[in-house]
Length: 128
Image 1 (cartoon, rainbow, N blue to C red):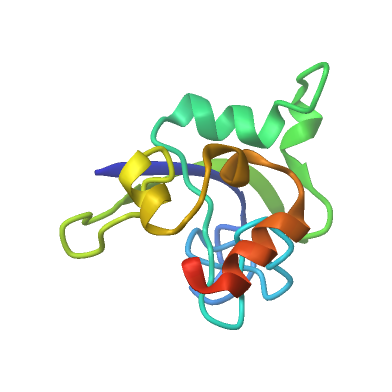
Image 2 (image 1 turned 60 degrees about the vertical axis):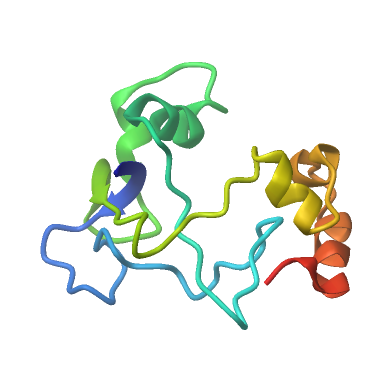
């Protein structure tokens, strides 16, 4: 399966440094389902369009300047393509009713922007 994300690319960045396509920021963990003490999360999309929309959808006007990443010297936003082996590493599909039932979650628990609710779901033990 191919997955996509927009990331700040630095051509000379080594694998575990900002600007590399596999890098995950140590500051990550503020997302609704993040749990950095147990795992790192790289948010990916099933389509290039969705990855671009996620990265730039909040902007009213798109311009070349949106590609610059001043926080990471030398970085420009790029679209990365990842090959993922779902057989070896099964994904949890939060759109699958059985996956939600198994975790005592409702669809509204998954899509809520209320981080306290998603943290409570993890504390109840129905999420990693």
